[in-house]
Length: 358
Picture (cartoon, rainbow, N blue to C red):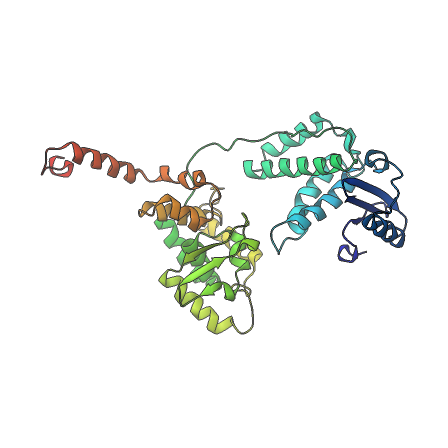
């Protein structure tokens, strides 16, 4: 049965049961039924305040398997997401990986910390720190979800967290930018405007493909990324560069009448494949950090390098914490030189400068 047809408070479990899980006036009602009709009757009784509590939540809840909790937790994450475009697909990769590792029919109370650590160790050599931490958070969230609903008696613990080493943010150099631009013009011309868009707006990969023509105001020269389609859930606006404005006007003439999204004629999967081919063609196949997201790093770096203040850059990039923005400052040693020059000039007798004496 499609999830959309089920009333709020009723869930179809992997065993085919219809589970009512509803809180009314501080009392939690949890009961399983063989048919949807019986579940709906019970739910109506709960809402009317006349349902009989036959057992406590812990007694009436059914212990969950890994498959049970993943099926339910993926739907739960979609339901609570701030994004209108949230879908199970973005969480299924985590769920499937965890099912493969622990076993679909493994009871949650049988998952030990050594089993979680084995998953952690296996991922260390294969995935980035951010992916490992995201998987860890997803697993902990799923186990916590089950524990709160009586599907797991043991209190869940986190399997581990990988510290992201402070280091150079991989941005695209001017030479790499020129080479990439030339490659796309010669081999994938349809993606040139998208490449420029990423470089000049610093938007996230998915934000470009969710952008609608209604989000672009050519008169005020603004592009708005609305909160229901951003990672942080917050809206932000950026100004258009001349090349972006010209490219978007041309796309509007060519595609505006047939598609609501700006880059709806392009495919994210195809762009990722094109990027992979381009990386090889540029001799960067061994550079794992030369990825699409590097264009976002590049935009942030260029803004700061050209004297834009941190607060403005934070808003432009949509960083939730200004420390994320400040992390880019160390890639610009010329700013340190300028700071030293300012101090030297202050220390010189009036009328002299460091530049004159060096």
